[in-house]
Image 1 (cartoon, helix red, strand yellow):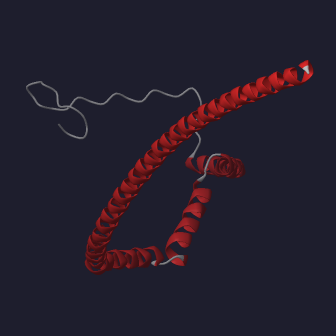
Image 2 (spheres, helix red, strand yellow):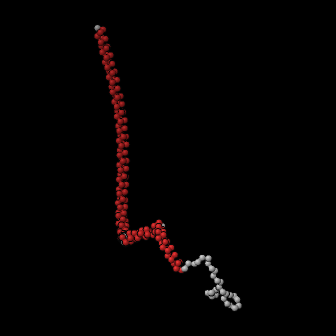
Image 3 (spheres, helix red, strand yellow):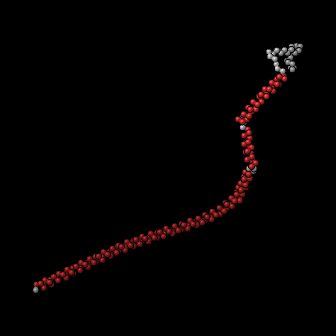
Length: 200
């Protein structure tokens, strides 16, 4: 294949002639006219394109706002704050490491020793309280037995007193009956003597 066109498949191998261009119904503008028209059209469209670009950038292009926010974020968290969080985290790490290595074992040992001592004291206090409760229970039992014995003694004394009073009452009644009989006899004798004197 050549730049002029495809070769003919004939035997001679000669190229076929190109067709002639057809005449145009309107005259073609010259190259200089095209440039002038393009420049005048570009000059007219340039302010419109600029205005459309400004409207687009104001309404739809948020890159400047986002870039401003990003710059503020970076300035706030990297430039102003610096490595403050990193230093705080390192301090926390060292504090936790020191607490795990030194303070926590000491606290565990102290707690273990003190808890053993407290447990012994609690056991001693518990035993003492049990002894006090047992002693108080025995004292209450003794007091209850004493009160019961005193009550029984008072009941026995009361019964003895009542029997004694009944016996004394019987004795007094008997003496009163005997005295009444004596008086009756005495009055009957006195009446008899009076009757003798009256008969004289």
